[in-house]
Length: 402
Image 1 (spheres, rainbow, N blue to C red):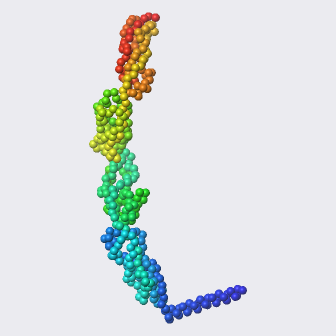
Image 2 (tube, rainbow, N blue to C red):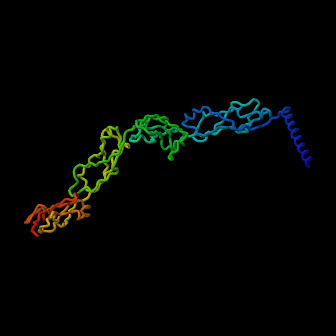
Image 3 (cartoon, rainbow, N blue to C red):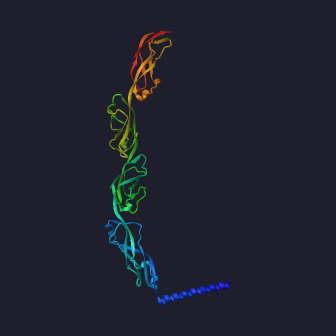
């Protein structure tokens, strides 16, 4: 069985060898005409300046190749490669946005080789788009943190606006242009020329467009910085019968920058005066800040929202027991009245929540001995309340031995 298989293999090998010898004979002696397709032959574009003259631009990621069917003697055809051809396409004709079918011209081909057109002249498809430009303000992204005790002012950029140029399809994706400046550890001013790049709404860089100019000059001022409170300044008085319950600020403190010798003298930032004379109810007012010379605000927002909570002033009658202080145990004290009527005045919210334990009516008998006396009543009260009247103002007291 093994001998039979070996004989079959030898027969097949001999057949192949004989066929190859015959093929060499035919190719060498007869050299017949053959047809073959050469693939991926590169195409060179010329007169490309006409694209820009037509206010168009070539879309990216395009490669231009063609396949050519050639005919010739077998030995010549089998030697042909794509590098043996020079193929060009003329962009000097009419062009439009979208697909443009551009005929190709075969400038060079191997000798003895014929290109078979098969009735269709070869062409390439060139995709063009409108060449547009759009102006965008330059945004500067500050990264990093300066040295402790320092901060940066808003960057100054020149030019503040640039053009983004390219295919309309890509320009429509641009949402903003941005350059980046790193201020890590900075304690003095920074001046740089930086690249700006276009980005879409998802903060991804838009490729295949150009910025004009490509670079912008950026100046970042670095100053000493600290936080101070804001003081609300008022002028004139509220209408009669009104009082300020509270003053609330949208930002109670403010971050200020400046040279250290100036900054050390600033303890607070005042507002421009608020005129109270026409305010008769709770009001919110946008008020400018009074910024001293040499002091800067980081965001340049030099105003805050101030809420003035205004309420009515009301009066209320209360009764207090009279307390006799500094008594001598050898005497008996008999006042003509044991309580006093007070008429107090204050803001409506405070009067309505009054705590009588905070009010004391006092007779001081520390230096008195036996006899009858008329003494003033001393009223001890919280400072936010005003005593309009007290009845009586004085009382008689009889002091006698036990």
